[in-house]
Amino acid sequence: MRFSFNTIVFPLSMSLIPFTVAASPLSFGSAEQKMGQLEISGWLRANIQNKSYSDEEHKLKFDAAKLALKYQRDKFEGNFEYRCYQFDKLCDFSSLVDANIRYQFSPNHLLQVGVQEIPFGPARSWSSNWYGGILVNMGLEDVHNLGIKYQYPIGSTQLEFAYFTGDAGSYTGKSRDAARYSANLVQTDSAHSQLEEKNMWLMRAQHQWALDDAERLNLNLGGSYWLSEIKNKSNQQSGERNSWALFGQLDYKPLKITLTGGHNDINNHDPIFTDSSMFGSFDMNYAVANKGYFYTADLLYSFALANDIQISPYATFSQLQKSTSNSSDSTRYILGTQLDYKSISLIGEYIISKNDAFVGGNTYSFAQGDPSASHNNLFNLIFLYKF
Image 1 (cartoon, rainbow, N blue to C red):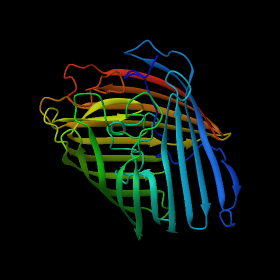
Image 2: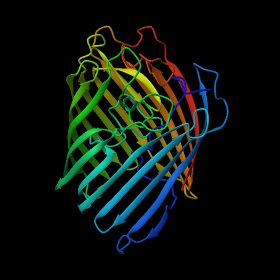
Image 3: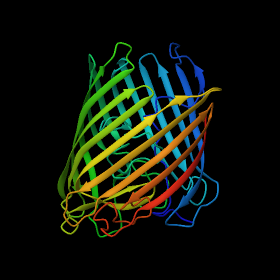
Image 4: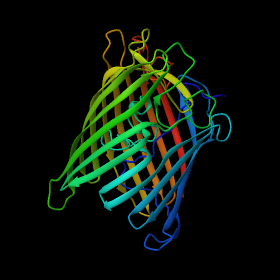
């Protein structure tokens, strides 16, 4: 069956989890040598799903593959990441994630150019699950665009300034413009205006405190701002995005709590759809509310057992609180546990959503939503091999 709003996808790679699966990448050369060092890594993923809103996919199937290349020589570093997904057949949707070069003046002082994550929110991922919070699909979290970023540390404070010319483009899939990893404004065949986001200016500042002498208790607080131009190609007018986020992370090993909140404001100059804009990702198009407050709360606890086994239970709440009076909020809860043994991981996640285009919803669930909508449930069992 072709990909639909009832099909689950997994964009993230659990960047908030403080350990990684014990798999060594394939490495050639050395960063100190003239030819430098090349590392090849990635993962293969399969899954079984059970949905309250569909009888499909109650069987084990291949889900996705990731290939990552990292090149280092002296202070230069290059990164490349590409993902392949299976909806009906192998790699019927695939997309570039990252392709960039950086120069490191020091470990936290760098200049990076190319397709890369935008500095918005606490990190690439604001939560510790595999499915991702609802803000991933709304184009606020885990967004990778084409641009340049400068990162500069001042003591325990880190400052980042970035300019992005536009998004990273569309790749292999069946949609007109939505065959992409990140959720961006896209060109569609709907009645919505054809929109393009460009000239994105972002900044992020965060400060870390070590609250005990052993540095087991750490607090990180910060904020980020996003200003960009929204080009309406249907009427040749220009709007803008003004978005901000505040965040805090409390890390008391092995416990980590991450809180993020902010406001998204898009002016699209669409004379008909003034309250929503068409976004696209993972080869599908859907409308997202232009204005609203957003929240993510994530709790992670990680511990090691004998024989190289590590276990990480976690919980995530994410929500878009829409500003228009006739809209219903979109909410996603995720409860999960990850078990790691060497290069193998087993992950179980239970997802409860309401007005969620990716979990039992429709094209307009992220826009006006439905006040009478019920919660949809999804259980997903993931098998991961990392190399």
